[in-house]
Image: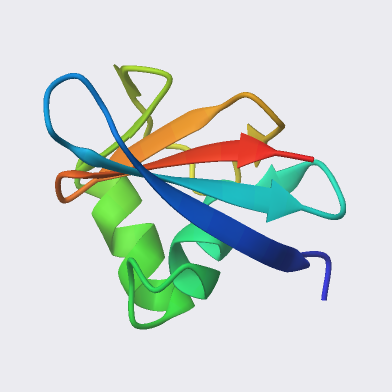
Length: 87
């Protein structure tokens, strides 16, 4: 498996959304895999569907590429939850 997510911390953003920091051991990581492994989608298929339906943003822009390469510093938002990637 190409993804090793080794830790996370929760923070509050200025608009009271919860932001978790996700530590990546390997980069880049495909967007759908992060949604699946972080529990924002129950399966890879569900993650791909959320992305295709335009329900996911990366760095504030709607992202419809399931295999979008995510790198440290990227912020993913879905369902009101935000994830910030870091090494």
